[in-house]
Image (tube, rainbow, N blue to C red; front, side, top):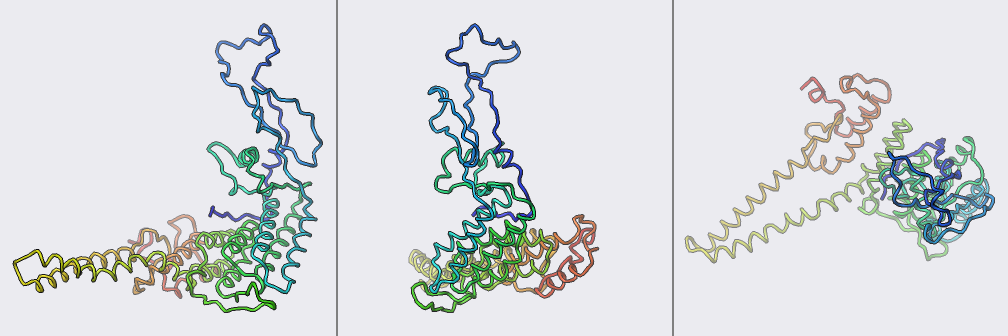
Length: 434
């Protein structure tokens, strides 16, 4: 999934307005009907452009007045260089339709279909892009090339006819800052009301779109509860009427919050400077039992199978080697080879496990307390890394001032690290104290 960057609701992007303004361009191509004698002679120190410049398309909207277009020359224009049209919409009417759609889904007697939920969330996401960027397509949805800004990338994406499947919308009038703030709060409440409703099943796609919307609007306070409901919310039966529910098992690996979503939520909380919110996000994402189970399943299952299969492989290899020797009894040779293979593989495996679980090059201010089990260090490394990011965000930026922080938030952060078998600013690891 692309990286999700949190945005403030009051942020206004004027790049789109500048890109939508018509620009006059000078053609460097000589008309075929112009006589050669009237051509302007270029100075000697400048060389004429050997290739003609392709005329650029002007960005228009449905609300703009139609312009007379000159039929292009077949040798100078490309058949795909048509005018780019952006659909316009009324922001006030759009908010009203979204509110009615959410009320319709939450008031029906059957479980909401996943397609309808995703459709409403996509509409809310496009509206959120219009609030923040002024256009329904955000920067993360457009591939940018080297030396090309976001506005040019959007226009290039539209010119390549990639927007036919996903139309691009712009407001028909400029939205004021108070209206943007009010609309951002309303959309955040709408998507929260929709996702937390008992008849709505929170799938991975629904969760991803929900986090993107809340982080884009700068409303991370709506995230921890939904993260918890992702693993604990009762699952509605899509075919039963009236709706029946089944209880999930929150510790299953499939209920783990994806790491990129957890990072985006934590970054949004850091930008809001809300320490209790950041700690709640950590507790419901990387510190949840489902996240640890998912990590063990993804990263430790193959090594575990290798370790459990080692005795059988060593026995088969030792039995084969024992048949090709004559220095000792075959049974003695077989068990000697088994012992040697297990000792060699077991020693290397133990050294590797200790090296992986005790590495500390990535640690900056938060380290593990001595005596913490190695398995706990490995399974909870993401939790420690998130607390380390909080310490870097709330503390001084200068390394020589580390350890001088004070205040209620800083003391709360130190206490949280202590309760989680971690140490914030261990004395013998600080600069100048080694």
